[in-house]
Amino acid sequence: MNQAQAVVLIAAELRLFLRPGRRGGPVAVALDGTCSLGHVVESLGVPLTEAGRLLVNGEPAAPGYRPRDGDVVTVEAVRRPQELAAARFVPDVHLGTLARRLRLAGVDAAYANDAGDDALIGQANAGRRVLLTQDRGLLRRRALWMGAYVRGARPDDQLRDVLDRFRPPLAPWTRCPPCNGPLAPVAKAAVAAVLPPGTRRTYQAFSRCRDCGQVYWHGAHSKRLEQIIGSAVRAADTGATE
Ligand SMILES: [Zn+2]
Image (tube, rainbow, N blue to C red; front, side, top):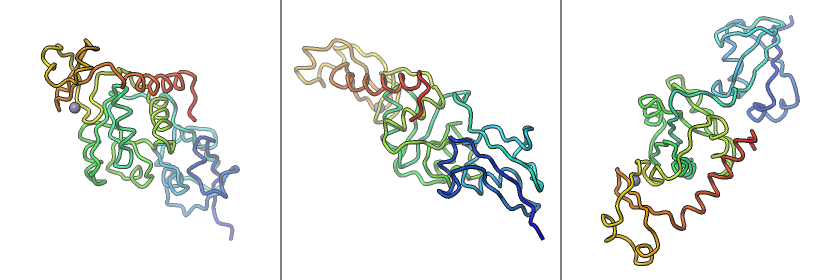
């Protein structure tokens, strides 16, 4: 008569993925005897990319485990910082501002504002890039090698979240914000012709994008860059995620 069920305890950091009525505490899940632990977690709305260790009755369990009646399942949040072999990313089409902010910080972020879901997944897989998105459906795609849900509505919050989660090495002024190409130092004489007269008089150090040719100098942009990067680094240092 009674249907088999498991009790699932979700880490506080993951409760935003649950339906509002379920965010207060343990969730009882009916079991049909065939679904896996990973499926149970995803059916509650939590992408597996966001889950850390899964425990069943206090013991670590694999996503393929089939929960039994009376099991108590604990879902931990992915541990920060999350280690990466290489800090390469591909933000989805809705995160263009985040892509530029990452590049400002010197982080490799490929981006195309017209990429469809399949193209994004292909790009992430081929380049071993972490797909950054706020689309949980995309994170559930089996073909995707690695993804991450980006928290925050504002680009500054999103940047802070990504830097806090992955702690990529930062190298401001090494990457072209519009195109992601690497910047290389260039002699003033080589770019003098394209500089506004005031810039030519005031600045001595220049760099140029190897991919698109855009010329940069340490001027008005750098103050804003320093503010953005400085606040992000400080937040990451203190472990804040909000
Ligand atoms: Zn460029």
